Picture 1: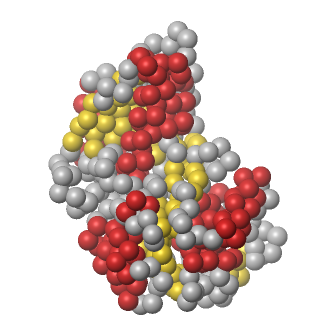
Picture 2: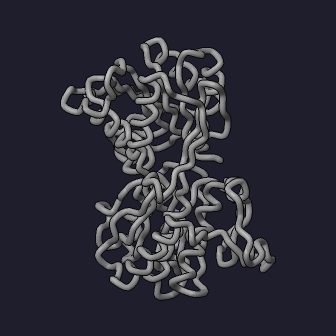
Picture 3: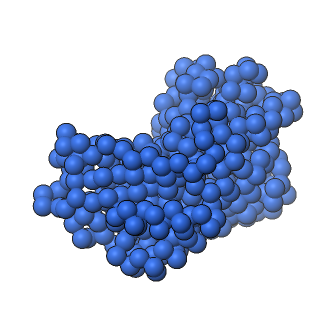
Amino acid sequence: MTKRFAALVPVLVAAMAVATGCGTTSDSSSSGSSGGGGGAKTIKAAWIYVGSTDDAGWTAAHDAGRKYAASHLGSKLQTTFKENVPEGPQTSQVIDDLVRDGNKIIFATSFGYQDAMVKAAKKYPDVKFEQATGSKLAPNLSEYYGAGEDSIYLAGMAAGAASKSGHLGYVAPFPIPEVIRDINAYALGAQTTHPGATVKVVWTNTWFDPDKESKAAQGLASAGADVLGQSQDSPSTGQVAKSQGLKWTGYDSDQQRFAPKNWLTGAVYNWGPYYTKQIQSAMKGTWKSASYYGSIKDGFTDIAPFGSSVSPATRSKIDAKKKAIEDGSFYEFQGPLYDQSGKLRVKRGDKLSLGDILGMTWFVKGVVGSPKG
């Protein structure tokens, strides 16, 4: 599985520095210490971010998770973060610095950090390492992520219901399995509320570049899309939707404040409880290497609050589908499923496995664009 595959480039606002930054918080006040667990020792935990904590997307959501852990563990936890860290040789230096500073558990929040984390796990066997969206394990290295595709399916339902033309646009970062399955889920969701709906994809080849995202969104609007979706880290797509009078679904975080009248909903991640649990385990000496894939059922993934334009009928349909996803009676990647060319990819009654969707390289019927970028 892949995520945050490219280094951070331009920033959302001038206040965001491109150079690597560091923040050390005082969130570990005793006022929130009740969750620390009796007798557990104090621990230092660190996060490595590919973006800025005020990107209003991916990194902001992770940093909210860090703050959640700090508030729940109180004085037993000291947290530090490094932001705008490039994916490359510099990552190893950042990890070395964090270990030298006494951090005993380190969370890296971009797939591009994985090689450095694997090396660090071998180099520092007494430190616990956690890789977001990773694919490799070691005795002291875990990987974690969640089924964002389920939430994106639900967002697609809102998008399809809001579309008058049936032509939706999607601003996408990289042509990798994670993004491809998200786009597929979005299209399938849209087609349940607007039969025959199509989703046109424009690739930006970056996770965070507001200028490229805006140009992609503008191009989609010019091509006739009346609803825009995204898998990008900034709210630039929503700001274009606002300027063009279109509806919009977001990603990573609740971004509706950037274009509230155009907002429908969006896929969100709740990192805090996971971070708290893993840190508590490290404190108590019960931490174990594992691969975690969270879900709507366990609260790791969800959808953001609905915008005012989402009708009661649409909300009811989405809520019902969300419950079906939670109880396992519905799965979006079940047959019959056809690809862009009309070829049957999944037979009626069959379902794609987790391994299948983690390696997905094809678009479903109704997606316009190449899955190769």
